[in-house]
Each structure stands twice: as structure tokens, then as C-alpha cells.
Amino acid sequence: MKGFFIKTFGDLKLNVKIRLYFAGIIAQFCLVALLLFTNLIKYNQEYNQIVQSATTASGFSIDFKSDFDYKMYRIIIGSEAFKKAKPYEDIDAAQRVALDLQLAARTSGNKDRAEGIHKFLNNLKKHVHKIEDNLKETGHYDENILILDNDIRVLTSLIQDTVLEYIYYDTLDMESVRVTMEKQTLKTVELSVIMLTIMIGGALFFSVIISNSISRPIKELSGITGQVAKGDLSVRSHIKNGAEVKVLSDSLNIMIGKLSDLIETVKIEQANLREAELKLLQAQINPHFLYNTLDTIIWLAEADKGEDVVDMVGALSNYFRTSLSKGNDKISLKEEELHVQSYLQIQQSRYKDILEYEIDIPVELGDHLVPKITLQPLVENALYHGIKNKRGKGKIIITGDQDGRNIRLSVKDNGLGMSEERLKQVIKALSKKEKESEKNFYGLYNVNERIQLYYGKEYGLKIKSIYQAGTEVEVILPVDYKVAAEAVID
Image (cartoon, rainbow, N blue to C red; front, side):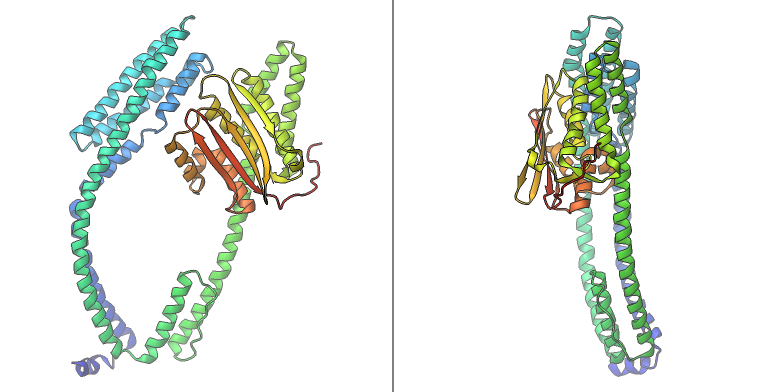
């Protein structure tokens, strides 16, 4: 049998042998693929329906409850006009999602849940309408608060819980399909193992026919490409014999060299691009903050509070002067402290009924360099997501100390805090590089990204939070960047 194959295929060209060899492999792979394709066709439609249902459910905002409750609270206390807030548009958008959930539901239970969500939203709209009517007259503040606490918050909780139930049962249905597909796949794998054994036997048989003078350099080239695939670009091929293989060897060496140069170029360009993007983000000043501050200054001036106007304008001037910092990316810690103190002074004028603050950073740390605008986004996050979402007065405490070769800055508040699930979501988002993470946690993401860009992955933010108790964000920086900094602020 061996002599027959040698006689039959021995004189064939190398490319013909390889074609015949791969033709046999492809034929076997096609058979395996056909079996897999048959199973996929069988379960594809059912699986697609589940995915469509889950995708529709994911369109319902996970923050609907907190966002809507907070919006209604601001409307009731007069912080936001009813027409400007447009709560009916939020409800209408949620109702459209609920209708889509009804159409996508695969089970009667989920269909009922989707209908229940729609009913809850109708009731929610009625209570919002009641608040709208009350706002047309004075003296209904307590009644509106009762409607918010006893009706709206309850309904938004029911809506949120029902959406989670809908997703949960959809997931169970998806798991059932997955288990069935897994069983079928195992059967196909068993057949594939048998066919793989046959393919290995055929490969060993044909390797006797193919000349060793061809197989050895091919194996060497294969080993080199394997090392390159693992990221080792220092390897080179040293094949000197065989015209065709030598050309391939030389081409491979040229390709590895160019690939190495290209990777280094891309790394440099990506680093420069990320730094440029971060500088651009850093340069964007929130216009709403400026508008609100100027409105406060106007109000103080109209109230003949000249000293307060001077203090406010001085704080605003210090805030923007430090933000610009003559184009410097890093400033001294004492200048960063002045920047965040100016910000808090401005915000305290606007939120004096709910905001207190304390800054305790040792003077001896003042000359250390830090990336500018490091503390202010953390303080802003504490104010808007922590203190403003709780009842009563809140406090922000900023501290700093030196721990060995690290500087640790802390921004702590006694605000609403985060649930364990929300805290895990924030921590996970900081380690990602998707744009979605940047959108949802812009302030924290930007600060953490800039610190790690300057100093490495071992530095950045650490977050601790307890729901209803408060949040602490710790900034870890190296002390190696200590200099006698020039005064950036004139």
C-alpha cells in the first residue's frame, strides 16, 4: 500500500500534493461543519427570539427609578420647571419599551409582566398629572411630597423590579436552549474527535511521502510564526537551502522586522493620541457651572451683598486660572487644593443649606506635583450624586497624607452612597476602555485614566461606598514627582 502511494504521488508536484492533502482535510471539515450547521439551523430561530426579547428589555433604562424620582423631587422643590423637565416624555418612552416587551415576550408570564409595566406607567402618569395640577397653585408642597413618597417611588420600584423579573425569566429560557445546544454539540465533538484521529493518521502517512528536505524548513518556519503569534518579534529564520523556502524565509524576516517597527510606531501614536484626547477633555469647561455661578453673582449684586460678590468673583477667578494653569498638565498640590477650594466655595454659595466641607491636606505635601483637575471632578461627583440625593445637610471632607513612596488623597462624603451592585459596576467600569464606560462615569473615568497614563496602572482611584452612609474616593499618586514647583497662579 505504501509503495502504491509512493508510486502514484511521488512524482507529483509539491503544490499538487498539498492540494490533495488539504482537499481531504477540507472534505472532513465540511462534514463536521454540516453537522454543526444543521444543529444551528434547528435552534437559531428560537435563540434569536430570546435574544430579541432580552435586547428589548435592556432598552429599559436601569436608572429609570433613580432618574425619574430625582426629577420629580426637583420639580416639587422648585429646582426645575415642570415643562422643562418633561416627565411625560420619560413615561412615554418607557411605555414604548413596555409595548415592545409585550410583542417580544416568549412566555405568557413575561407577557403579563410587560402588561403590568404598562399599567404601572399609566398610574405613574396619573400621579404626575396630579402633581402638575398642584403646582399650578401654592400650598401643596406637603401633598406633593406625599405623592412622591407614597405613590411615585412605589410605582417606579415596581416597574424596576418587574423589568428585572422579565429579564430573569428570559435568561432562564435562554439557558434551557443553551443546555440543549450543548448536548448536541458534545455529540458533534465526539464525531469530530473520531474524524480528527483519521486526519492525524492521514497526515502521518502523507508526511512519509513528502520530502524531509521540505518538511524540516516548513516546521522551522511554523515554529517561528508560532513565536511571532505569541508576541516574540525578536526571532528570525536562518534557512539557507531550498530556493522556494529560502525566499519564504527571507520574506518572513522582512515582515517580522516591519511588524516590530509598526507596533512600536502604533504604540507611540496611540499614547500621543490618548494624551491629546485627555487634554481636550480636560480643557472643556462645563458651561452650566459658569452660568449658574454668574447667576449667583448677579443675585448677590442685586441683593447689595458686595463682599459676597467679591468673594464669589475671586473664587471663580482662582478656579479658572488654575484650570488653565498656563497650559501645564501638572500643578502643585497646594494649587490643586486652591482650585478645589474655589469650586467648593462657589458651590457652597449655591447649596449653603445642604453643603459643608472641610479640607485637611498637610502643608508639607504642597510642593508635590499632581495632574491638574484631579480633586474637583471627585468633589463634583460627591456633591451631585451623593449629597444632593439625600435629605438634610451633607459634608465633604478632603484629606491627604504620605504613605511611604505614595501620596494618598481622599474625597469623602456622607451622602446617599452606592449599593454593592452599583459599586461593583463603577469599579468594573474604571478598568474598561469602552466609550460606554467613559460616558456613564465620565468624571471618575477621566481622573483615573489620566493618572494611569502619567504614572502607570498601579496608581489611580480606589472607591469605597456604603448605601445611605456615604462614599470615599481615594487617589493614589507617586511621590517621586516632588519638585520646587513654580507658582502657576499669578
